[in-house]
Image 1 (cartoon, rainbow, N blue to C red):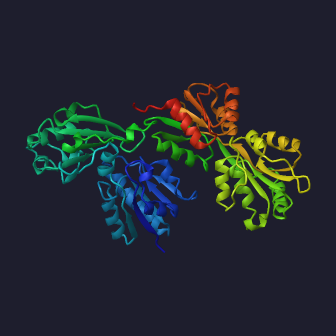
Image 2: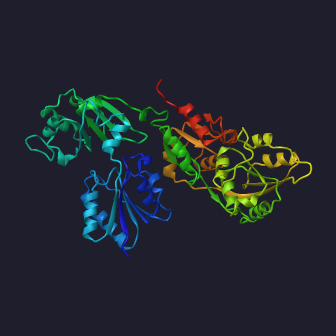
Image 3: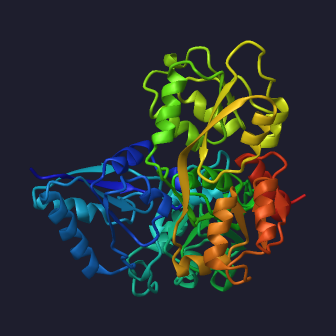
Length: 498
């Protein structure tokens, strides 16, 4: 049976602009065929076992386009669900129409998933509405590549003089190289040299940069591809917001595991930063195969423990994989070291009885009640292998009988040298655990070429590890959460105007 090809618009760059339908088909893809500027976080939406094909097509490479067309057909005829992930919208200068025609001619079923086009999204991210009541009621989107630009005598592929006379906003895509010719032809058509122009490079990306000029000065403006050029009265409006976020234009290295990194990356994107994901650790089963954990969970379900104490979301997940019905916990009280762990418990419909105000083992000890005189004194403490002993020891000294069990191991994950070098060029690096810091520094060393100038840590334990390894810690979260870590970074790197 022949599979289906989905022509999916990925949007202009910001992965948050992918449509819900686009995310749905990516999540079920067998094959993802993507272009050279596709954000890595979008590719991660596909199943881990999906084939990812980087076609790396350069603009105007028609030979490669024929190969792409055939690739889509070949994979579909293998019965696979194929996602053709394209920047912007597939049918706006995206050759989606050519691919759809070829698929139809070959008898391959396809679906078009529209995307947010850069012609609208990029001006919006630069604070420029393409239409505005009282100024303009229409806009034109036009390609500015060589085939559409020529002298007035030669005609060119686009009648720029007519565009100048039609009125409204003109949005030019792919026009960086020919902006001087475009400006000349528009002025020849009657547009004044003083007409406002906004040119936006890397629109909707963390490195977005906006240049404001006029039509007469456009040729000499310092801009390069990829750029979206907005010409018209609306370009005189400045409703900018995207580039004013506190970490706009900054790159921050995220060293959490591949499973945990997206949450921190999303928080960093919210404040304008580009998150460079460099997973330094991975989770592995405990060395005993999980025997101690299974034994502890059996006692937990039998009601032998007075308390179950969780120090990480990972421990929560490992335990509740072995608890098919949370009603079996009965009267067992539950403690969580912090809000992230408490949130992980809520996912299993378990509300923590105790969350300390200080999100550390020491804070949990300060808040933990004394053992009752005539009831169970047993505490179940599932945790990472090699975890600090302060919590177990403190509970035991308080009179509790503590059963510990390794729920998982944290192991180092190899980092490619090219990724380490890219990380060294970043503005900051985040460490959310001592194991992440140790793994990164074991592979990168402490040289400035591989460690960014600003080091941020989630709390004092991780900060102590970084300092012990020879790093200067620039920012430490006052609240030991991911939100607190991002707030500390904003304090260290923030560039908010006024």
